[in-house]
Image (cartoon, rainbow, N blue to C red; front, side, top):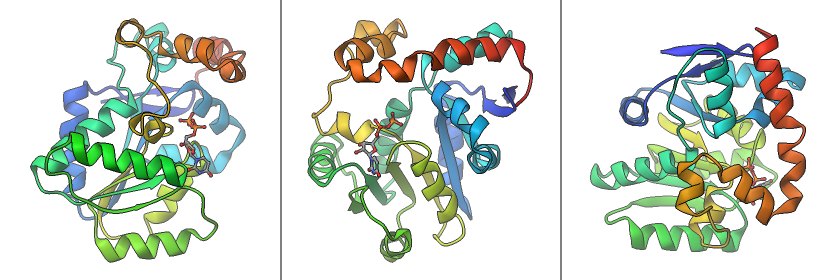
Length: 238
Ligand code: UDP
């Protein structure tokens, strides 16, 4: 099931349904793309047609962040919020249990090294066959290196829209796999950025905590969030 919001389709899966769908895509015969969408990405898609097309062609678009959940609610759709970081983490656990090879690309070298080390310690049996930092000029070299290791689950943490474009272009060159853009998740998994306390997460106020602790993010909330919510009730399409 999916609903249209500002010209883009958003899937309305529960967390468990989304995990099951992802497992089917991991076993599929093509490269599949999961987009974890937030209000800033809607804004970016309005200005960047290529980015909007990429989201439209994605195999799954899940509502990351409370802003999208509220916008859907204002349009009469009740749906579960699926934080990309929790979703990706769960897929890593599923991959470990089912012996699915994993690749991770993104973040600074120290960050990804530490994140990979932590993930291996925390998730028993996790098979990370390839990882690379997110600062490179030649995407084709990275695609070739990934292909040589044949991962089936590929997490890409380079921020938006860079990671979505990297995944989109990979569709033409990589062996079948499921690819997900996971934004700043490696920063959290490395331990270098702290996630909001559980109570903020449960109340959907993670964005508030992050803005107070990293005031440089204020630009990303104001005016983006209120503008996005107003548009979501006044405009039916882009
Ligand atoms: N990043 C990267 N390559 C780049 C730019 C950014 O790997 O060219 C990484 C950055 O180090 C960080 C991640 O992308 O780990 C996400 O950045 P940000 O928090 O800005 O993205 P968001 O999650 O808000 O989309």
